[in-house]
Length: 351
Image (cartoon, rainbow, N blue to C red; front, side):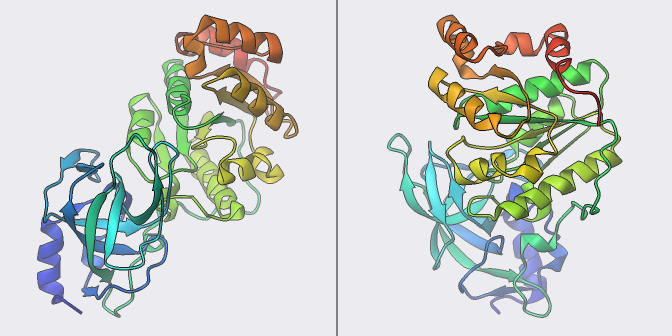
């Protein structure tokens, strides 16, 4: 133990607490244990030693606070999979990296050529309770267990999946939330996979969602390398809590793209796909759109429309429409209630 409980509390109050640790109750922290092998979601105190790719950290309130060398930050040990930034795994020693502004401590394995090296941190210790047990995000969950038999009632579950990062998935999901909310529908939105970060959740709320969730509410800092059944369980928890909100629609977004292992596994998981009523595809290119539509065909979940960054190009819209026969909609059309009404009219009757 490095600090007394009282002095540690004072120290933590001064530290910058990250978004992914927002459910942590600082009063539960009574000790700072020496650095040791960590597990996914373990909570830790770190010192910023060199600022590079991430010069700011997202606070629980959503504000991005500027970082300075020697700042102390409260983070969670995790992995990261981001094709346009870092691949990173759990830290193995005191020297580590801040690999996501949401507050992930990890060791970088590889990075995209266009980004700077990761911001460097020194892990000062692991946060522990009165019994000297390391605190983990899994101890501070906000999603209740789902019953064996889900009763979704008349709630429609819409899945948003994309061809890759930056294909327009969150923008598409946000537009759906906004359009449905403006028609006086009760909408819940969720990010089921990815790396813990607040902007997507805040965007869903700003667009009119009555509630928004992600995997951090289930105790995970990120979902890379997580078993498919764990993600399926979280999906069921999100559906369950959406029912308590009496939601009419639940919009679920999957991160990354069709070749990312967790996304691919969920699309191929019959139990998960059977929960979904319809799917919206976000694509950044015509071949990717065709591949994703083909991949979704075996799930028997109807692809209701294709959108995403490819719709900036009229020629790509025509290509995709020609080869898929599916509505290929610009963002402006997604924001049009009349268009969305037509697309959703293709859904089968409420189960």
